[in-house]
Length: 104
Image (cartoon, rainbow, N blue to C red):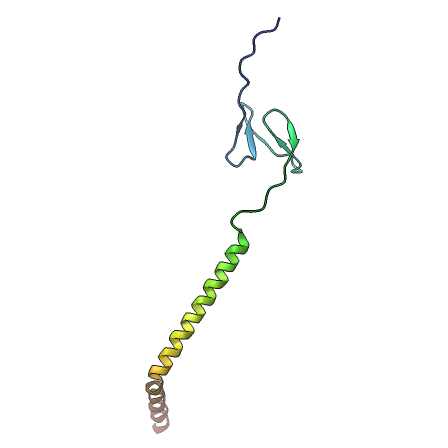
């Protein structure tokens, strides 16, 4: 007769699921080629990852371009308003500078 076996030690995986604890050290839970995954007892074929959630880098690029475009539009509107309201005064200042340079 064999000795009664206790409960099997539970395999602990890292939070990212890429490592497992064998009782003395962390070991990779995914084979080097990415085709196999350790399930705690044996190697099994790795399931392909599903589609990325949240969009990743493409969403970040789109948001950055949209923000930059929005800033350009805002600066353009402010410049247009300033030139329409103060255009004659600015032209007068430049005329005075040119007259002062020509007079010396």
